[in-house]
Structure formats: C-alpha cells, structure tokens
Image (cartoon, rainbow, N blue to C red):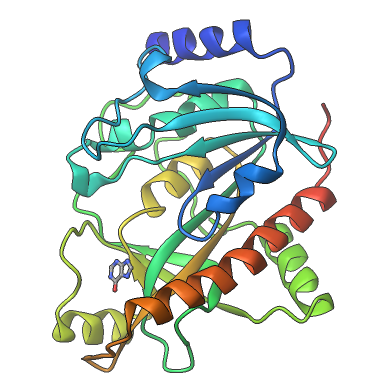
Length: 274
Ligand code: HPA
C-alpha cells in the first residue's frame, strides 16, 4: 500500500506547488465552504492515481487545493462511505495520502441523528469522542510501522486544543454549539427505536455512518482532528420524531452558515509552518 500511496502523493506534489498543512472533509453542513476557497486547483478523484473511484454514488468526488483566507487548504468534496461497499482501506485512503503530504490538521463534518434529549434538529455538535461500531477496523491487517503504530492510543482522538478553540469561537459569536459523543455505525439503514435506545444508554449523543474510520487513521497518522455533527433528525428514547423535509432543510441551512463560520475561524487561529 505504501508504494501506491507514494505514487498518489508524488502525482499531487507534481501538480500542486504549495502543499497545505490543513485538510477538510466536506460532509453535511459544509458544502458552502468551497465558495470561500480561492486560487483553487481541483482534481476529480478519477484522475488521481490509486484514489478510490466514487462510482457507487454516481456523483463525482473532487480534491481541491486552494486558500481559505490566509491559509492553504486541501478539501475533499465527496467521501467514501463503508455502506457504499468500499473496504476500510479505501474509505481511509485519502487520510494516508494526507499523512504523506504532511497534513497536520483535519476538519470533518457529518450528518447525524440526535439522541441527546436536549438536542434539536439543526444543532451543531462538537464531537468530543466517539464509539466505533463499524464491523471492520480501518487498521486491521498487516502493520506497516512506517505509517503508524500497531496499537495506537485513542485517548484524545479529537484534539483538545482544537476543541477549546472551537468552543471559544462559538462563545464569542453566540453560536449554539452542543458537545458530545458520536457513534459510528455501518448503516445503511437507520436505527430501530430499540437500537437508538441502546446507543443512547451506551453513551452516544449523535449517531451516523461516517467519520470514525477516517478519524482513527488520522490519529494514527498524528494528524490533529476537529469534527462536528449536524443534527438532521432526532431519535430520542426510541421515539423517532417526525420532522418535515422543509424544516430539516431550513435547520441544515442555519447550521451550514454557523458551521462554515466556525471552521473558517478555527483555521485562521491554527498555526502552520508553511
Ligand atoms: N442514524 C444514522 N445515521 C444518520 C442518522 C441517524 O439517525 N441521521 C443522519 N445520519
């Protein structure tokens, strides 16, 4: 795998003059962010050697390099979900590419069901920790010591330093920011009422079908992670609250403005060396 990763990395380095130290995976609530990126160079996933092909979903993924304010960023528009049929090495391949490129910070967002009783549709939750319920571990298999540890520590999977910065920005700007634990499941079906109940009792505040594999590999790669859930539906005490599509869209729109602002602000405050 390392040989392939090196080819992917070299291909990117030949085409991008200035490699950033910041990467963003655009999940739900961050789609707008691309409009703020300047001096962009974009590649469709198909043209990047060894990159997983986003054929399953139909729409094309793009890897974008550019500037967000003063900072250089690398943006993944379109991610690989386990439920689409990718194996974990494919799901997390972009993270290893980030590692070889020298990425130091990773920002991620996702759509999630809210299980905490105090959450509302449209809330943004700062992910403080996660519970990995995926049936396959992204680091399972032959270990390559050049990439990371056999048994990586996960006691601070979500950077405390970045979380503090995000909370501070939210407070300064009156942005409602929930905090909690994200449960990552394989999907693609949503949870049954009994499952939501079980995940809540287990300690989860939100549940979704992404993020956890990428974060585990990023932590192994010594990349600092900051991640957010956008609460798109509520699943509280086994009672799945029905909301109208219009309400969800409205809530997501509000979340999008705030989440985009939050991430942009955190990025202006992190220090990079190139
Ligand atoms: N469960 C799992 N994934 C999700 C949910 C949910 O309730 N909402 C959005 N993504």
